[in-house]
Image (cartoon, rainbow, N blue to C red):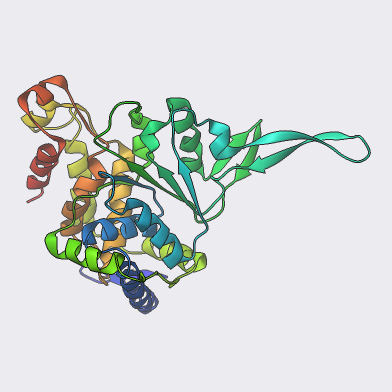
Length: 338
């Protein structure tokens, strides 16, 4: 897939790329329909999660219990035909419970050798339920898997299946017995998606659809190979220089060392790093594809600023004392883009 540049220095997608985007758009329409038959409301949550999967990233879903986070992950696994595993994170969970371990076996001839038994991380879609309930040692077991798509056990590397995505959930209310995720791990999540209560119409639909004699179930629409092709397609979407500059301006302005805004210098303890810029570049491409457009715009940058930046920034004590929130800081950053 190629793009061309005309005399006015405007990026023009090739006919092959246009056809591929149209075809993916039809597939995604079926995906949305399949998800919508099981997940009611939560349109923004579904869209942001789809964008993350198309960009090849991981999602941190934050919301109170009972809002369908687990059901969303199960539905995505079904719709995309992905092999799914679920791990309930608890304080006594050990890294070996996620990655796997080596066991000593003895053959019939008496020869002893170690055999690696794979843990639940060896799947295509891993649901890390209540990830902040595990100890930092166990949380760090996912770092290498999320970044490198492989794990190291007893000095040996073991590649993970492709594609590989982590969809983690976190309960914002119950803080007792939890361990906040370290900054390094938060940065590995492509987006932090906040799951809010459904509106009245969606909740009415939930009541009718889930309390009857039978419930609707999702069906497979795409397979892992289709998802991999879609992820490759996203990386071929052209991005104009104005959008690239908007991403750079937004991310760099969020750093207190560089930010020209007095609010950032006064209230932000640490800001987004280069992974935030990379995530926005992939995110705006994926968002354009999901909406059937041939190139992203600055509106895409503004739409994805909150889910991509909110977990990559931290407020200082002065901000918390004055009631300043990350949301208000990101809103102010977005205003600088016009």
